[in-house]
Image 1 (cartoon, protein in one colour):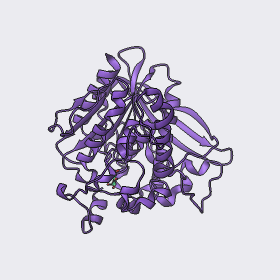
Image 2 (cartoon, rainbow, N blue to C red):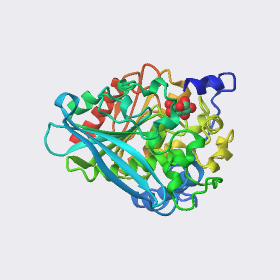
Image 3 (cartoon, rainbow, N blue to C red):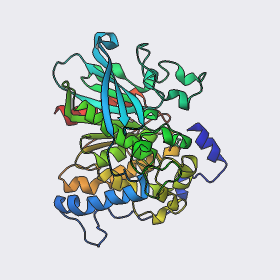
Image 4 (cartoon, protein in one colour):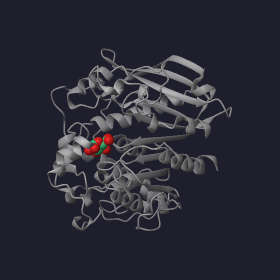
Length: 408
Ligand code: GCU
């Protein structure tokens, strides 16, 4: 993050609210043929599919036809994990097309109390399962050596524990499932051949077609494969699955939530450009910047909107609206200007009409709430003090939001 912000510090990154261009958001309820949706049925059969198609072909890319095999192997099971409070499992996922395979490891903690089925948070980690806890039995990601030099500090156990409030999550009666995102698509353009993308029929290592999926599409797909596994777990309540993604994983979480309705709560933490933030504000990171720094995240078609946000046929309030009537929560951090907190808030606000169509609540004011005053309706939002990160405060809000929707 620092690197990217520094790289562009000298260039035209706008952090001045008065320089946000005036813009018109593409219509949420108006179909391409001009008709305005007024019923849930019209939304679900006409406008929603239209928007989903646009996000697929113009932004995140299209999952190829055809299937690959996914198998699971329980590698470890520890009924006394987290000081006896949880059962920990590590599960190897093998993705294969019969000729070639890749592997990933899921780390799952299920609270020992209460007995019976529990809701679950699913979320990728950035630095390996080993980074989320100091538990020495937690295995390293099978591809970590591809992305981090052997002496890199990220090999240290527990280097991201502050982002994973396991004790709090377990104490509140939730399971939590995490996987290193590199296991699905190692996050460097030159590692495409090591990603699950490379297993699909028609994959060509030398070319990328304009609407072909890339890393964000792959990460979203991978989180749905975690759900497939969770559905096999007796202790997991598969009607109560939340996905939480931070930053680039917040982008992938929203995209996963838009496509897979098994995610009943979708949480975007500081997801910024390509996540919750409205592109048309051109505040902080922009389409041009993100495509140049991360050419392997979005589909190739998306690059035609570099510095031309006004002709992009969608904007991110529409992505959030695709999650309705399921619950969505957007979170920002005050100092995270790169991610445009106001743009993140406004897209949650402008998704409202679709929630209202379902008889649900929308955010009722376009004024941002104060710091640490979360909005907890069917669309949730908070902004907290501090930097780009996942903190205990963020988790407390997500747990409150999940309690509200899963436990009442
Ligand atoms: C970079 C990138 C952001 C992204 C972030 C992250 O800062 O520019 O778009 O969200 O990394 O994933 O932490």
